[in-house]
Image (cartoon, rainbow, N blue to C red; front, side, top):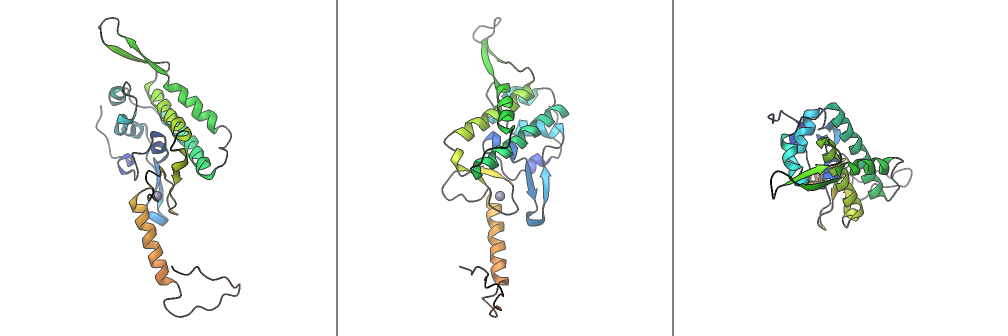
Length: 223
Ligand SMILES: [Zn+2]
C-alpha cells in the first residue's frame, strides 16, 4: 500500500454519515461565504485514500481487499463521481419531497447491483470461507456497496431525517441524528451565528431610527 499523499480527503469537514452521504460530501465549500468549491476526489489516488479511510464501513469481506488491492484508475474515479452526482440529486429530491431527475434512480440501482456477493467454502482449507462477487473489479464492488447504502438510507427509518445543511455557504448533507442537530457540523452553526450577530449590529434599531422604506417593507426586527 502506498503512503497517502496530501489530499483533500484528509480535510473533509464531515465524515461518519452513511457511506452514501459521505460520498456526496466529498465535494464541499472551503472558506465560508466566499469560499471555494473543493472536490476531494480529483485523482484516482484520492479515491483509494477515501476508500481506505472508510474501509471499516464496507462489508467485512471487502475491507482487507480495499486496503491492499490494485490502485484505482481514472475509469473508477469517473464511476464514483457519476454515482456521487446521482446521490446528490437523490438527496436533494428527498429533502425537498420531489421526484429525482430522470436516470437518477436507474443509475443508483445499476450501481447497487455491483455489490452482489456471497461466501464460498475454500475447497483446500477446511473451515475457511472465500468471498466472491459477481463483479470481479473490487473498486466497482465497493461502488456497489456505496449505492446499496443509499438504497438502505433512502428507504429506511432515517430517510425522513436526511437534511441539507441550512448554512447558506454549505452544500453538505447529513442525517439529523438527534433532535437538536441543526447543522452539518458545529463549524457551520458557529459561522451562521457569528454572521447573524454581526448583521444585527449593522442593522438599524440599535442606533438611529431607520428611514421608512418607500415600499413599506421593513427589515425583520432582531429577536
Ligand atoms: Zn454545513
